[in-house]
Image (cartoon, rainbow, N blue to C red):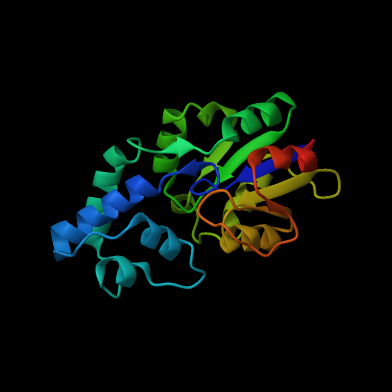
Amino acid sequence: MKVVIFDMDGTLIDSKKDITISINHIRSLHYKLAPLSEEFVVNAINMDARNLPKMFYGTSTYEEKDRKIFEVHYAKQCVKNPYLYDGVKELLKTLHSNGIKLSVATNAPTPFAKKILKHLEVDYLFDMIIGADRVSASKPDPQMINEILDFYSFDKHHHKAWMIGDNSKDILSAKNAGIDSMFAVWGFTSRAEHEIIITHPKEILDFIL
């Protein structure tokens, strides 16, 4: 058995426009702040160490009012502009047709992830789609990966698994779970230092099949 676990934002899909629109909605509604650029938002999200409430809203902590309004706004916004990166759908279908087990581990909330992937008509290809709301600690903690591996009754002595993502947190979560990983640089991250760097989804097939 072979298992491939994907990060979502910046790996499978480009979602930066909708994320930025929802963040700027909170900035305008609650703080009367000027809008942030998509580039700033993506760079902030991909930092290894950062205080997102401070960077996005100028607050030391994530206020409950901001979280609630963001989730209501993003629930409608999240399917307006996302798209699969070039070659992703073909990759997923090829892996699926070859019997590879596919799942998603994302730091985004599970309901949003499922809604977006269903909108993009690829949700049926995944056995599990799990977000940070389903675990007590998000990536780089390995909880999400471990839940997926447990679902498959994964045996590291007889099976093989990979985590594919665009962020150091994805790579560390794989390391912490004891599986291999690949760093995707076609999405939110253009540069990386890693043993396996993937510049186009089709390159993944050379390692998996």
